[in-house]
Length: 413
Image (cartoon, rainbow, N blue to C red; front, side, top):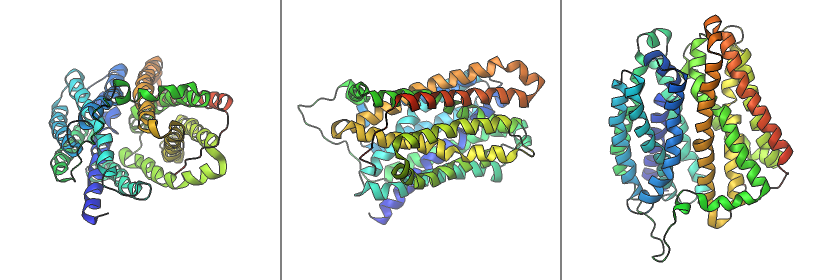
Protein backbone atom coordinates (compact mmCIF):
# COMPACT_ATOMS: atom_id res chain seq x y z
CA UNK A 1 0.00 0.00 0.00
CA UNK A 2 1.08 3.55 -0.70
CA UNK A 3 2.75 4.86 2.53
CA UNK A 4 0.88 8.18 2.27
CA UNK A 5 -2.48 6.39 2.07
CA UNK A 6 -1.53 4.11 4.97
CA UNK A 7 -0.60 7.15 7.05
CA UNK A 8 -3.88 8.88 6.22
CA UNK A 9 -5.94 5.82 7.09
CA UNK A 10 -4.04 5.32 10.35
CA UNK A 11 -4.56 8.97 11.36
CA UNK A 12 -8.26 8.64 10.48
CA UNK A 13 -8.57 5.62 12.79
CA UNK A 14 -6.60 7.40 15.52
CA UNK A 15 -8.96 10.38 15.51
CA UNK A 16 -12.11 8.24 15.17
CA UNK A 17 -11.47 6.44 18.44
CA UNK A 18 -9.74 9.35 20.18
CA UNK A 19 -13.05 11.20 19.84
CA UNK A 20 -15.07 8.36 21.39
CA UNK A 21 -12.56 7.71 24.16
CA UNK A 22 -12.25 11.41 25.03
CA UNK A 23 -15.75 11.69 26.52
CA UNK A 24 -17.59 8.35 26.65
CA UNK A 25 -15.38 6.76 29.32
CA UNK A 26 -15.97 9.59 31.81
CA UNK A 27 -19.67 10.05 30.94
CA UNK A 28 -20.90 7.89 33.83
CA UNK A 29 -19.10 10.17 36.27
CA UNK A 30 -19.85 13.46 34.50
CA UNK A 31 -23.63 13.03 34.45
CA UNK A 32 -24.27 12.69 38.21
CA UNK A 33 -21.46 15.04 39.25
CA UNK A 34 -21.98 17.88 36.75
CA UNK A 35 -25.58 17.55 35.58
CA UNK A 36 -27.04 15.93 38.73
CA UNK A 37 -28.60 13.16 36.66
CA UNK A 38 -30.30 10.24 38.42
CA UNK A 39 -29.87 6.56 37.58
CA UNK A 40 -32.49 6.29 34.86
CA UNK A 41 -31.49 9.61 33.29
CA UNK A 42 -27.92 8.26 33.09
CA UNK A 43 -29.24 5.04 31.52
CA UNK A 44 -31.20 7.03 28.94
CA UNK A 45 -28.10 9.00 27.97
CA UNK A 46 -26.03 5.81 27.59
CA UNK A 47 -28.86 4.23 25.61
CA UNK A 48 -28.29 6.81 22.88
CA UNK A 49 -25.33 4.64 21.83
CA UNK A 50 -27.70 1.73 21.28
CA UNK A 51 -30.23 3.87 19.44
CA UNK A 52 -27.40 5.13 17.24
CA UNK A 53 -26.33 1.54 16.54
CA UNK A 54 -29.88 0.61 15.55
CA UNK A 55 -30.25 3.59 13.21
CA UNK A 56 -26.69 3.44 11.80
CA UNK A 57 -27.39 0.75 9.14
CA UNK A 58 -30.02 3.00 7.58
CA UNK A 59 -27.55 5.89 7.23
CA UNK A 60 -24.74 3.70 5.89
CA UNK A 61 -26.92 1.40 3.79
CA UNK A 62 -29.31 3.96 2.35
CA UNK A 63 -26.98 6.96 1.95
CA UNK A 64 -23.25 6.15 2.00
CA UNK A 65 -23.53 2.81 0.19
CA UNK A 66 -25.82 4.12 -2.55
CA UNK A 67 -25.43 7.84 -3.22
CA UNK A 68 -22.35 9.60 -1.82
CA UNK A 69 -18.64 8.97 -1.32
CA UNK A 70 -18.00 7.41 2.08
CA UNK A 71 -15.20 9.87 2.94
CA UNK A 72 -17.50 12.85 2.27
CA UNK A 73 -20.28 11.44 4.43
CA UNK A 74 -17.67 10.77 7.12
CA UNK A 75 -16.46 14.37 6.94
CA UNK A 76 -19.92 15.93 7.11
CA UNK A 77 -20.99 13.72 10.05
CA UNK A 78 -17.91 14.69 12.05
CA UNK A 79 -18.24 18.40 11.28
CA UNK A 80 -21.84 18.35 12.53
CA UNK A 81 -20.64 16.22 15.44
CA UNK A 82 -18.14 18.93 16.43
CA UNK A 83 -20.99 21.46 16.72
CA UNK A 84 -23.06 19.02 18.80
CA UNK A 85 -20.07 18.36 21.07
CA UNK A 86 -19.80 22.09 21.72
CA UNK A 87 -23.48 22.18 22.65
CA UNK A 88 -22.95 19.23 25.03
CA UNK A 89 -20.05 21.16 26.58
CA UNK A 90 -22.37 24.13 27.21
CA UNK A 91 -25.35 22.12 28.54
CA UNK A 92 -26.21 22.88 32.17
CA UNK A 93 -28.74 20.12 32.86
CA UNK A 94 -29.51 16.64 31.57
CA UNK A 95 -32.72 17.82 29.85
CA UNK A 96 -30.70 20.19 27.66
CA UNK A 97 -27.85 17.69 27.25
CA UNK A 98 -29.97 14.71 26.10
CA UNK A 99 -31.17 15.92 22.65
CA UNK A 100 -27.61 16.85 21.69
CA UNK A 101 -26.08 13.53 22.79
CA UNK A 102 -28.89 11.57 21.09
CA UNK A 103 -28.36 13.41 17.80
CA UNK A 104 -24.61 13.05 18.16
CA UNK A 105 -24.71 9.26 18.67
CA UNK A 106 -27.11 8.82 15.75
CA UNK A 107 -24.49 10.56 13.61
CA UNK A 108 -21.37 9.05 15.22
CA UNK A 109 -22.25 5.35 15.21
CA UNK A 110 -22.43 5.18 11.37
CA UNK A 111 -18.88 6.59 11.19
CA UNK A 112 -17.58 3.35 12.77
CA UNK A 113 -18.69 1.52 9.63
CA UNK A 114 -17.57 4.33 7.33
CA UNK A 115 -13.94 4.34 8.52
CA UNK A 116 -13.86 0.59 7.88
CA UNK A 117 -15.35 1.06 4.41
CA UNK A 118 -12.78 3.72 3.50
CA UNK A 119 -9.97 1.49 4.77
CA UNK A 120 -11.05 -1.77 3.13
CA UNK A 121 -11.49 -0.10 -0.25
CA UNK A 122 -7.84 1.05 -0.23
CA UNK A 123 -6.02 -2.06 1.01
CA UNK A 124 -5.27 -5.09 -1.12
CA UNK A 125 -4.77 -7.64 1.65
CA UNK A 126 -7.21 -6.89 4.53
CA UNK A 127 -6.16 -9.91 6.61
CA UNK A 128 -2.59 -8.66 6.87
CA UNK A 129 -2.96 -4.88 6.52
CA UNK A 130 -6.16 -3.85 8.31
CA UNK A 131 -5.18 -4.83 11.86
CA UNK A 132 -2.12 -2.55 11.81
CA UNK A 133 -4.30 0.36 10.66
CA UNK A 134 -7.08 -0.42 13.17
CA UNK A 135 -4.47 -0.56 15.96
CA UNK A 136 -4.16 3.23 15.68
CA UNK A 137 -7.78 3.46 16.77
CA UNK A 138 -6.93 1.67 20.01
CA UNK A 139 -3.91 3.96 20.43
CA UNK A 140 -6.22 6.96 19.98
CA UNK A 141 -8.60 5.72 22.70
CA UNK A 142 -5.65 5.07 25.04
CA UNK A 143 -4.09 8.48 24.43
CA UNK A 144 -7.42 10.20 25.11
CA UNK A 145 -7.69 8.49 28.50
CA UNK A 146 -4.08 9.18 29.45
CA UNK A 147 -4.47 12.85 28.49
CA UNK A 148 -7.57 13.29 30.65
CA UNK A 149 -5.93 11.75 33.73
CA UNK A 150 -2.25 12.60 33.50
CA UNK A 151 -1.99 15.67 31.26
CA UNK A 152 -5.12 17.69 32.04
CA UNK A 153 -6.09 15.97 35.35
CA UNK A 154 -9.78 16.61 34.64
CA UNK A 155 -10.86 13.42 36.44
CA UNK A 156 -8.93 14.10 39.66
CA UNK A 157 -11.04 14.67 42.78
CA UNK A 158 -10.35 18.40 42.56
CA UNK A 159 -10.99 18.47 38.83
CA UNK A 160 -14.34 16.70 39.17
CA UNK A 161 -15.35 19.02 42.02
CA UNK A 162 -14.53 22.05 39.85
CA UNK A 163 -16.53 20.68 36.91
CA UNK A 164 -13.54 20.09 34.65
CA UNK A 165 -14.98 16.87 33.19
CA UNK A 166 -17.06 19.17 31.01
CA UNK A 167 -13.87 19.88 29.06
CA UNK A 168 -13.86 16.32 27.69
CA UNK A 169 -16.59 17.38 25.24
CA UNK A 170 -14.50 20.31 24.12
CA UNK A 171 -11.58 17.92 23.55
CA UNK A 172 -13.80 15.54 21.59
CA UNK A 173 -15.29 18.42 19.61
CA UNK A 174 -11.89 19.73 18.54
CA UNK A 175 -10.83 16.23 17.43
CA UNK A 176 -14.14 15.82 15.58
CA UNK A 177 -13.57 19.12 13.77
CA UNK A 178 -10.07 18.02 12.74
CA UNK A 179 -11.32 14.63 11.48
CA UNK A 180 -14.24 16.28 9.69
CA UNK A 181 -11.89 18.50 7.72
CA UNK A 182 -9.26 15.79 7.27
CA UNK A 183 -11.83 13.36 5.85
CA UNK A 184 -12.06 15.40 2.65
CA UNK A 185 -8.38 14.62 2.01
CA UNK A 186 -8.92 10.86 2.27
CA UNK A 187 -8.86 8.65 -0.85
CA UNK A 188 -12.03 8.79 -2.93
CA UNK A 189 -14.46 6.08 -1.86
CA UNK A 190 -17.51 6.24 -4.16
CA UNK A 191 -20.50 3.91 -3.79
CA UNK A 192 -20.12 0.52 -5.43
CA UNK A 193 -22.55 0.33 -8.31
CA UNK A 194 -24.87 -2.63 -8.11
CA UNK A 195 -26.90 -4.27 -10.83
CA UNK A 196 -29.54 -1.92 -12.16
CA UNK A 197 -32.05 -4.75 -11.86
CA UNK A 198 -31.09 -5.50 -8.25
CA UNK A 199 -32.69 -3.09 -5.78
CA UNK A 200 -31.60 -3.52 -2.18
CA UNK A 201 -34.42 -4.35 0.20
CA UNK A 202 -34.86 -2.82 3.64
CA UNK A 203 -34.00 -6.23 5.11
CA UNK A 204 -30.68 -6.35 3.27
CA UNK A 205 -29.79 -2.80 4.30
CA UNK A 206 -30.19 -3.42 8.06
CA UNK A 207 -28.85 -6.96 8.07
CA UNK A 208 -32.14 -8.86 8.38
CA UNK A 209 -31.42 -10.94 5.27
CA UNK A 210 -29.34 -13.08 7.61
CA UNK A 211 -32.23 -13.78 9.96
CA UNK A 212 -32.64 -17.18 8.32
CA UNK A 213 -29.40 -18.18 10.08
CA UNK A 214 -31.40 -18.30 13.31
CA UNK A 215 -32.93 -21.56 12.07
CA UNK A 216 -29.55 -23.10 12.92
CA UNK A 217 -29.77 -24.11 16.60
CA UNK A 218 -26.16 -23.25 17.41
CA UNK A 219 -26.36 -19.85 15.76
CA UNK A 220 -29.61 -19.08 17.59
CA UNK A 221 -28.00 -19.98 20.93
CA UNK A 222 -25.03 -17.77 20.08
CA UNK A 223 -27.34 -14.93 18.96
CA UNK A 224 -29.34 -15.11 22.19
CA UNK A 225 -26.17 -15.30 24.28
CA UNK A 226 -24.80 -12.24 22.45
CA UNK A 227 -27.82 -10.20 23.51
CA UNK A 228 -27.72 -11.45 27.11
CA UNK A 229 -23.95 -10.97 27.65
CA UNK A 230 -24.34 -7.33 26.60
CA UNK A 231 -26.37 -6.72 29.77
CA UNK A 232 -23.29 -7.09 32.03
CA UNK A 233 -21.24 -5.22 29.39
CA UNK A 234 -23.57 -2.22 29.81
CA UNK A 235 -22.86 -2.23 33.56
CA UNK A 236 -19.17 -1.68 32.79
CA UNK A 237 -19.71 1.20 30.36
CA UNK A 238 -22.26 2.92 32.57
CA UNK A 239 -20.74 2.42 36.03
CA UNK A 240 -17.01 1.65 35.93
CA UNK A 241 -15.61 5.19 35.82
CA UNK A 242 -18.03 6.47 38.47
CA UNK A 243 -17.37 3.42 40.68
CA UNK A 244 -13.58 3.76 40.57
CA UNK A 245 -13.85 7.47 41.30
CA UNK A 246 -16.32 6.93 44.17
CA UNK A 247 -14.02 4.52 45.99
CA UNK A 248 -11.04 6.85 45.75
CA UNK A 249 -8.92 5.58 42.85
CA UNK A 250 -6.79 8.31 41.32
CA UNK A 251 -6.26 8.90 37.58
CA UNK A 252 -9.23 6.66 36.84
CA UNK A 253 -9.57 7.37 33.12
CA UNK A 254 -5.86 6.82 32.51
CA UNK A 255 -5.88 3.53 34.41
CA UNK A 256 -8.92 2.33 32.50
CA UNK A 257 -6.81 2.43 29.31
CA UNK A 258 -5.19 -0.75 30.68
CA UNK A 259 -8.31 -2.40 29.26
CA UNK A 260 -7.54 -1.18 25.73
CA UNK A 261 -3.89 -2.25 26.03
CA UNK A 262 -5.13 -5.67 27.12
CA UNK A 263 -7.54 -5.72 24.18
CA UNK A 264 -4.69 -5.20 21.71
CA UNK A 265 -2.60 -7.96 23.31
CA UNK A 266 -5.50 -10.43 23.46
CA UNK A 267 -6.07 -10.04 19.74
CA UNK A 268 -2.66 -11.67 19.31
CA UNK A 269 -3.62 -14.54 21.66
CA UNK A 270 -6.99 -15.21 20.07
CA UNK A 271 -5.77 -17.39 17.15
CA UNK A 272 -3.83 -19.56 19.64
CA UNK A 273 -6.93 -20.13 21.79
CA UNK A 274 -9.03 -20.86 18.72
CA UNK A 275 -6.57 -23.49 17.53
CA UNK A 276 -6.05 -25.17 20.90
CA UNK A 277 -9.46 -24.90 22.55
CA UNK A 278 -11.98 -24.33 19.75
CA UNK A 279 -14.73 -21.74 19.39
CA UNK A 280 -17.05 -22.92 22.18
CA UNK A 281 -14.36 -23.00 24.86
CA UNK A 282 -12.92 -19.65 23.75
CA UNK A 283 -16.38 -18.05 24.08
CA UNK A 284 -16.85 -19.67 27.51
CA UNK A 285 -13.50 -18.26 28.70
CA UNK A 286 -14.67 -14.81 27.59
CA UNK A 287 -17.93 -15.17 29.54
CA UNK A 288 -16.11 -16.43 32.63
CA UNK A 289 -13.84 -13.39 32.43
CA UNK A 290 -16.92 -11.12 32.69
CA UNK A 291 -18.03 -12.85 35.88
CA UNK A 292 -14.52 -12.77 37.35
CA UNK A 293 -14.06 -9.09 36.48
CA UNK A 294 -17.22 -8.06 38.32
CA UNK A 295 -16.39 -10.23 41.32
CA UNK A 296 -13.02 -8.44 41.52
CA UNK A 297 -14.81 -5.09 41.33
CA UNK A 298 -17.22 -6.18 44.06
CA UNK A 299 -14.51 -7.12 46.57
CA UNK A 300 -11.62 -4.85 45.54
CA UNK A 301 -10.86 -1.42 46.97
CA UNK A 302 -8.59 1.55 46.29
CA UNK A 303 -6.21 0.55 49.09
CA UNK A 304 -4.77 -2.91 49.66
CA UNK A 305 -7.27 -4.37 47.18
CA UNK A 306 -6.38 -2.04 44.33
CA UNK A 307 -4.65 -4.89 42.50
CA UNK A 308 -8.07 -6.57 42.20
CA UNK A 309 -9.47 -3.50 40.48
CA UNK A 310 -6.53 -3.29 38.08
CA UNK A 311 -6.85 -6.99 37.21
CA UNK A 312 -10.56 -6.43 36.64
CA UNK A 313 -9.79 -3.59 34.22
CA UNK A 314 -7.09 -5.67 32.48
CA UNK A 315 -9.60 -8.49 31.90
CA UNK A 316 -11.32 -6.27 29.36
CA UNK A 317 -9.19 -7.77 26.59
CA UNK A 318 -10.37 -11.31 27.32
CA UNK A 319 -13.95 -10.16 27.96
CA UNK A 320 -14.21 -8.30 24.67
CA UNK A 321 -11.94 -10.17 22.24
CA UNK A 322 -12.72 -13.72 23.33
CA UNK A 323 -16.45 -13.16 22.99
CA UNK A 324 -17.07 -10.39 20.46
CA UNK A 325 -14.19 -10.91 18.05
CA UNK A 326 -14.62 -14.69 18.28
CA UNK A 327 -18.30 -14.17 17.61
CA UNK A 328 -17.56 -12.11 14.50
CA UNK A 329 -15.34 -14.91 13.19
CA UNK A 330 -18.02 -17.51 13.99
CA UNK A 331 -20.71 -15.41 12.31
CA UNK A 332 -18.54 -15.03 9.22
CA UNK A 333 -18.09 -18.81 9.03
CA UNK A 334 -21.83 -19.50 9.35
CA UNK A 335 -23.08 -16.83 6.97
CA UNK A 336 -21.67 -17.93 3.64
CA UNK A 337 -20.53 -15.54 0.92
CA UNK A 338 -23.96 -14.03 0.18
CA UNK A 339 -24.86 -13.06 3.74
CA UNK A 340 -21.53 -12.14 5.35
CA UNK A 341 -22.25 -8.41 5.64
CA UNK A 342 -25.89 -8.96 6.55
CA UNK A 343 -24.96 -11.45 9.28
CA UNK A 344 -22.41 -9.07 10.83
CA UNK A 345 -25.05 -6.32 10.72
CA UNK A 346 -27.52 -8.60 12.49
CA UNK A 347 -25.06 -9.38 15.30
CA UNK A 348 -24.17 -5.69 15.67
CA UNK A 349 -27.87 -4.88 15.92
CA UNK A 350 -28.26 -7.58 18.59
CA UNK A 351 -25.27 -6.51 20.70
CA UNK A 352 -24.67 -2.76 20.48
CA UNK A 353 -28.36 -2.23 19.72
CA UNK A 354 -30.80 -4.50 21.55
CA UNK A 355 -28.46 -6.06 24.15
CA UNK A 356 -26.92 -2.87 25.47
CA UNK A 357 -30.21 -0.98 25.25
CA UNK A 358 -31.64 -3.52 27.69
CA UNK A 359 -28.42 -3.58 29.71
CA UNK A 360 -28.27 0.17 30.40
CA UNK A 361 -31.83 0.11 31.76
CA UNK A 362 -31.11 -2.97 33.89
CA UNK A 363 -28.00 -1.29 35.30
CA UNK A 364 -30.05 1.77 36.26
CA UNK A 365 -32.76 -0.43 37.81
CA UNK A 366 -30.20 -2.32 39.90
CA UNK A 367 -28.59 0.93 41.04
CA UNK A 368 -32.01 2.22 42.04
CA UNK A 369 -32.75 -0.92 44.06
CA UNK A 370 -29.59 -0.51 46.14
CA UNK A 371 -29.73 3.30 46.34
CA UNK A 372 -30.41 3.24 50.10
CA UNK A 373 -27.17 1.33 50.71
CA UNK A 374 -25.23 4.13 48.99
CA UNK A 375 -26.12 6.42 51.88
CA UNK A 376 -24.86 3.87 54.40
CA UNK A 377 -21.68 2.75 52.59
CA UNK A 378 -20.37 3.31 49.06
CA UNK A 379 -18.43 0.05 49.25
CA UNK A 380 -21.51 -1.99 50.17
CA UNK A 381 -23.56 -0.25 47.47
CA UNK A 382 -21.05 -0.99 44.71
CA UNK A 383 -20.49 -4.53 45.94
CA UNK A 384 -24.21 -5.26 45.56
CA UNK A 385 -24.32 -3.58 42.15
CA UNK A 386 -21.35 -5.53 40.71
CA UNK A 387 -22.52 -8.91 41.97
CA UNK A 388 -25.61 -8.65 39.73
CA UNK A 389 -23.77 -8.57 36.35
CA UNK A 390 -21.37 -11.22 37.70
CA UNK A 391 -24.38 -13.47 38.31
CA UNK A 392 -25.89 -12.66 34.90
CA UNK A 393 -22.60 -13.56 33.17
CA UNK A 394 -22.52 -16.92 34.99
CA UNK A 395 -26.11 -17.69 33.95
CA UNK A 396 -25.38 -16.79 30.30
CA UNK A 397 -22.24 -18.94 30.42
CA UNK A 398 -24.23 -21.93 31.70
CA UNK A 399 -26.92 -21.45 29.04
CA UNK A 400 -24.29 -21.37 26.32
CA UNK A 401 -22.40 -24.34 27.79
CA UNK A 402 -25.52 -26.52 27.92
CA UNK A 403 -27.26 -25.53 24.69
CA UNK A 404 -24.40 -24.87 22.26
CA UNK A 405 -23.10 -28.04 20.63
CA UNK A 406 -19.40 -28.00 19.90
CA UNK A 407 -18.58 -27.45 16.25
CA UNK A 408 -15.48 -26.64 14.23
CA UNK A 409 -15.15 -23.14 12.80
CA UNK A 410 -13.46 -23.61 9.45
CA UNK A 411 -12.93 -20.03 8.27
CA UNK A 412 -10.68 -18.62 11.03
CA UNK A 413 -8.53 -15.91 9.45
